Length: 162
Image (spheres, rainbow, N blue to C red):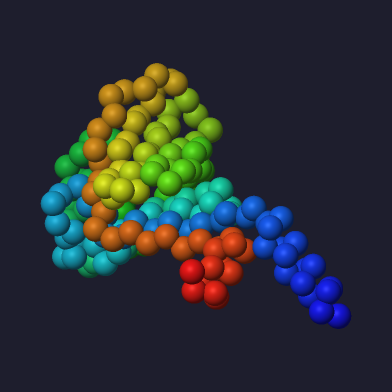
C-alpha cells in the first residue's frame, strides 16, 4: 500500500506539467488614478486554462450617467446606451512570465490586440483595420495585480511551504 501511494505521489509530482494560471489586473485606468466615482470595478481576468480572458467593468450610477451623456455627443454611437455591467471577451495568443497577449473575439478584419505587461502593470493596445495594424498606444495602467497558479506542482509547493 505504501508503494502504491509513493508511486502515485511521484508520478503526479514529476509527470504533471500543468501550469494553469489566473491572472487578474485590477483598477485599470487610462488616467494616473483609478476613478472610483466612475467605476465600481474595472479589471482584466486572464484564465490560461480556458485560454480566454475578460475585461469586466462596472459603472457607478454617476459614471453611467456621464458615459451616456458622452455617447450622446459622439455621432455614430449615440444610439448605443452603456450598460452598468460590461464584459469584453478575448482569446489568449501568448503567455509568458512577463507578457500576456490578448485578441478581441471578432470575426471581422477589424480587431484589436492587447499586450499586458506583468511587470509594469500596463496594457498596450494595437488596433487592426482590414488586417493592417495602426500604431500601438498605452491604453491602461492597472493598480493591482494578482497571479494564482493552479498546477499540481504549484499546489504542492503551497502545501509543503516552499
